[in-house]
Image (tube, rainbow, N blue to C red; front, side, top):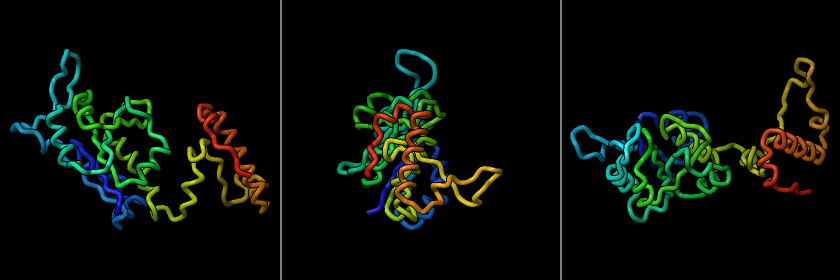
Length: 233
């Protein structure tokens, strides 16, 4: 069974976007995964197709309505649908490579893209939405975040990457940032490829890469160092 993504959005024309290109696009065309972009306004009941209203208690902006969103979610994810229901939200739990791998191993995801000031808390609670954040910053809506999440997931689906090992040696897979990479020419503007990488000694190369990864992680993401997996010798 292929990975099935359903995205609830006010801007379905934003999909597949970049996901229709490169690895994700080829996998989409091949049926390795599927993408359905659902217009939330189709579930409004008034002639203006209203999806938002003023916030209870006052304040700036507008809030997306629970009744409209619940109908959209129920359409995309009827009873018995095993897919997790995700809400792209800056207050959500940070997306990690571990969570990406969990999603890639599952049947798909239903992803709600919020707009305006946010969505009514009652639909989050009533429909069991898992709030997910792609970083400590604010976007104009959940769509770019959904594209990021799906790109991260789709590349891990079986057969999408030409070499499955590529996904095992990247940043965050073992708690570290990835080591530096080099290729031809052997010397560039006076900077040679490190000798160890052209030595042919795979054990020494592995040790060097690990040391470089630890160094980069300590410098740039010390918060990750404690979670790093030990090197298997």
